[in-house]
Image (cartoon, rainbow, N blue to C red; front, side, top):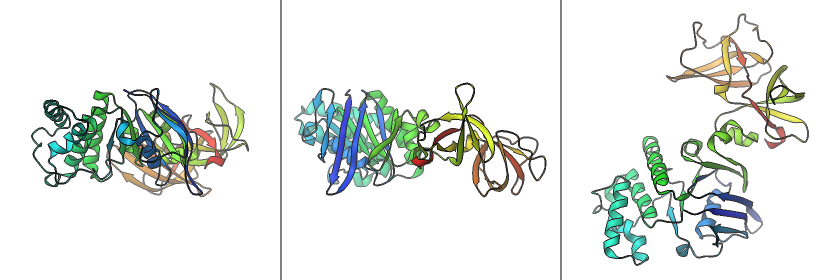
Length: 362
């Protein structure tokens, strides 16, 4: 196991600054995910850790070892690529054994370790097959076994599931996470898929324009986003303008949202005093209004259902508010004695699980 540190890492290509002073310490055995849209710098950062790209400034350390300018083959990293990067003319056994042979490991040990890792990824009995004779999910398992068989100090994975269909993605993320926990290998995983990041990670770093916008455990990043960008990129979020009124009870703040008062947490102070309420669809309450004009009280908003989608265990509603704004609301299980349909007048309860972020961070 290896503690990995990124120390003020920057990367420029000419006048374009791709990474801007990224710093983070990744503890031993952590599954650490770099999450963000295309062009945010996540793959460049991964390639700097791998040694394929040199930083313009800053350092990368594995434990006490400065790896910033160490060649890739001497870093002890395992790499799983988006396109698998298997040797098409080599068998599964030879693909997995490649890194061990390059390290001059004894033949008996190679046979033992390759067999062990093929069994671990569920490919026992596939050693003599060629990659062309295997499915996408099986080839990804070969790539994973090849990366882990060398017992790397750090495992790096660049969008490894993006070429798989939906069911295989779910299956493979379980395989990857289970193996990572068994081996306790420090892992950096790059993805733009929020569901993958939430399901697999110990820590998520949400990247924006070459910087880490927020970093923390999946639950923290989802439930306590510090910026509007993070709230919208990680999960669905309703954003409404809010005015700060002052201190509330139980450590919460009082704010006015579209004419009604709510209590919640301010994640970052706004220099200009302008905030946005962040409300997850599942944290909003929904009930039929007693009259077409509604009957909301403090902490509630009236609206009308524009559309709904029944999805079995949950129902998703799109609610129009009188001022022209729209809210996404999700309910789970049965709606109660009074069903809610398209066109119905409703009351939306905001509740205290809403958080508030500076509007300037949008």
